[in-house]
Image (cartoon, rainbow, N blue to C red; front, side, top):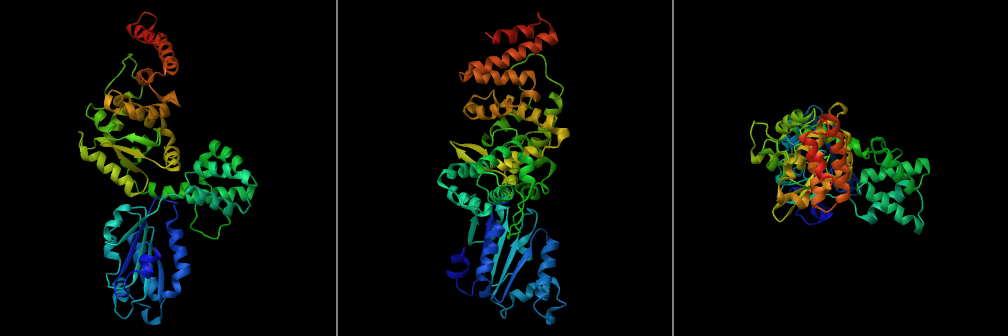
Length: 434
């Protein structure tokens, strides 16, 4: 960062650096530390709230007006002209939190052959506005995370504490804002890292919504409030997509499951025991609204959904042998699930089960589905008998006979109770128990 902005570039060129990453990963903190150290090198160094076009315009005007009385009446265009003037070359502007993907940022920054511009954003596509360096921040390393925990909890650690601190760091996914939250809580309560992990697992939503206090760096919010800033910008379609995938395991969800299910209108039944459940049609309608908004399946829909969530740094993806696999940071995964509106919880989970049950009929996906089936089966209350039976089939195919038998016995009891002992559906479920 210093090499790009201070050392390596000739003074007659504008230096522009885009810093992107998920909420709470330390983008604003990094730039603030840069400002503390290097502000004396510039005649003007201003932070611009880039949350929207209106905040950018207001902050640029106010920044120039603060320079002196001769600028007290400048307009926005005149403020831009100040920075583009060859008389004013030694300045730096930080466009902080330029997260809105619909924002035309290029029209709001000075186009000059001098000066320094830093942009912090969750929108990784903003990297396209610069031909220079794009710094994409990730989470911390294990050693860095432990150091933050020690520093923010204001305690010295003994060797025997190292494992607990590492476990805590892994539990919050090495995310800086969550690490500071944890350290602050440990300082205030005197609890150990091991105790914090236990409390976090039992009260994750409450813990992750509580901001760190007593920190000099005011950019530290709570982890969940950092994510909420992106959530507020999402369309209802994107929110539903995020909620559905939060019901699966956080790693390696095969995106190919979606077109396979969508091309069959999400109506495939690997097992039909006659009981579709009360949310069967509603879950299909939701899936069609999210993945087939035009009324029919289009391949580019899933590409657009994936790109949009990536632009907000809410998901990432990897490719393995031609398959696109979705990845979600562990805290974003739990946050997205916690943000499902209570009145829609059953419907969202029913839709996730319907999608995966359909996908279970595609042999090419078999190696990618078990972790996601396990995630759904960990809370089976919202899974229809048909879909539970479909998942039991996959368990049996993976030689997990005991788990499969438990589900088949449950389906048998349900069908027996609903249809009676002599029903044909009952015979089908009974047969699977042996």
